[in-house]
Length: 214
Ligand SMILES: [Zn+2]
Image 1 (tube, rainbow, N blue to C red):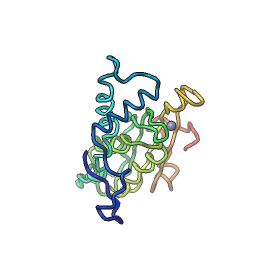
Image 2 (image 1 turned 45 degrees about the vertical axis):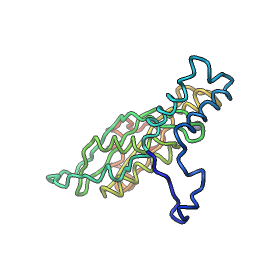
Image 3 (image 1 turned 120 degrees about the horizontal axis):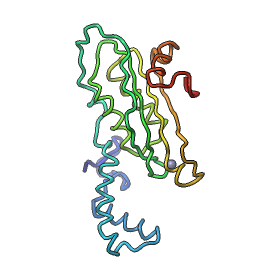
Image 4 (image 1 turned 30 degrees about the vertical axis):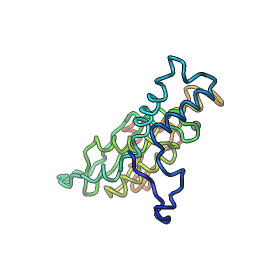
């Protein structure tokens, strides 16, 4: 978790200050600043331990930065005994964080692919979703990243990813529209080219004909 990010085109001495991971003490101090900004006293009894807890929470919320999604998918099973039907994992719980407001995006992801010569343990599909979700995100980019990663590493005949999620930056602030879900999809290969494959996938995730993303 303590890796220092460097831009490859810069010498190590020229790493921008904004790219160096701050210390835990600096992160806690930043939380104290935000508590003061909210209008409270970070030294009062109930808040004394809060910066420490927030920083620990951030380690969980943003655990995806320490994951390499391609590595997660790297272990595949090549012996498929000719299985070439659609593999679908639906209703994967998704918890992410809007990169504009750092508030939760909560919903579910549905992932499908059509194996060509390799399959992967289904828990890996859920871990890929998690590795991209546990970062600062926008839903459109996350949807594309998940699909592209599976396409590049597994090289299946096609990949489909649908994410439906509520953005707390919409439900608890701003225009305050609770109950609104945003739906994004990325279809690659045969899911993009073949309407019947796409229909089969959407039926399997319970989206038969519904929504504007078929
Ligand atoms: Zn937002």
